[in-house]
Image 1 (cartoon, rainbow, N blue to C red):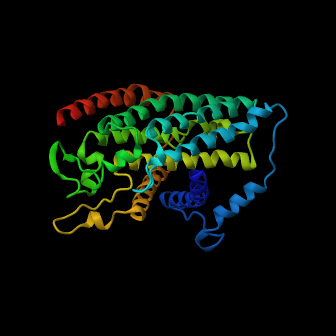
Image 2: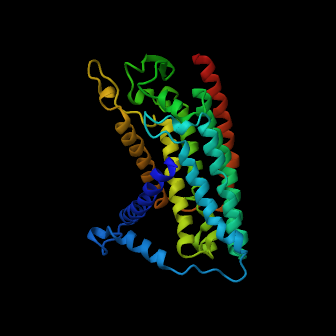
Image 3: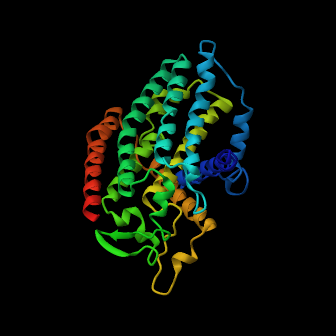
Length: 351
C-alpha cells in the first residue's frame, strides 16, 4: 500500500517530466528546438498530449480476444510497478521488509513478458504477434546476462536484501572495505564513493556495463527497441491499442526505465549513500547522510542513468534482430558467466 501511495503519483509525475525532458534532449542532439509552443519553453506540451490521449476513444477491433486484449496492458504495468516495493529509498526504510528483495524484484518484473504475449496474441493481428514474439525473445535472452550481473553483486555482498547491499556501501557499515584489492580505512572513518561496489571491486565496472546494456534491452529502449520498431511493425505488440490502454504501455516503459536506474544505483553506486568521503577532520560523509539526504542521493543517481538512456536513444541506430540476439548469447552471457567466477574468486581471496 505504501508503494502504491508513494510511487504511483511520483511515477505519473516522472512520466510527464521524462517525456518533456526526452523531447528536449532529442532536440538538442538533433540540433532542433523540441517543444516550445505550449506554455513557457513548451513546458505544458506533455500535459496537453496526456489530456489528448485520455480523451481518445478506446477502440477495440472486432476480432480481438477481448479478455486477453483488455488485461494485457494491466499485467505489463502491474508487474513492473510491483518491483518498486523492494526498493530501499533511504536509511530508515528496511528494504520494504524484503530479505530476498533482489529475487522478488527480478521474479515479479519478468512477468511483464506474459502481458506482452497476451497483447500480441489477443490483438489477432500478425504485426502485433510479430512484435510480441520479438519482445519475448529479446526479454528472455537479456534476462540471462542481467540476472548474472545482479548475481555477481549478490555474491560479493552475500545478501539478497537491497537494504543490506546499500548499507555495506556506506558509512553505516563497520566492515573493512577494499579499494583496488588493498584494504582501505574503515568505512565509518572514510565512506563516500570509495566504499561503493564499483570502487571496492574493480571488475564490477564491467559487470555494471553488462547490466546497463541488458537493462536497455529489458526496457525496449534504442538500440533494442525492435519489438515496436515503427518502420517495420508500426508499433509492435500494441499496434491495436489506443487511448488509455496505449498509455499504460508507455507508462510501463518509463516505469521500467526508472526501476532499472534505481537498481543500478543501489547495486553499483552506493544506493542512498553520499558520494562525499570524510577527509581528515572534515566529516563530509556524516554531514550529507540521513533520511532526506538518502532520498536525494538515490534519486539523483537514478536521474543520471535515465538521462544516459535518453542520450543513447537519440545517438545510436537500431540493431538488426540477428545482431541483437548475437550480442546477448555470444558476448554478454559468456562475459557475465566469466565475471561471476572472477567475483567469486576475488571474494575468497579478499576474505
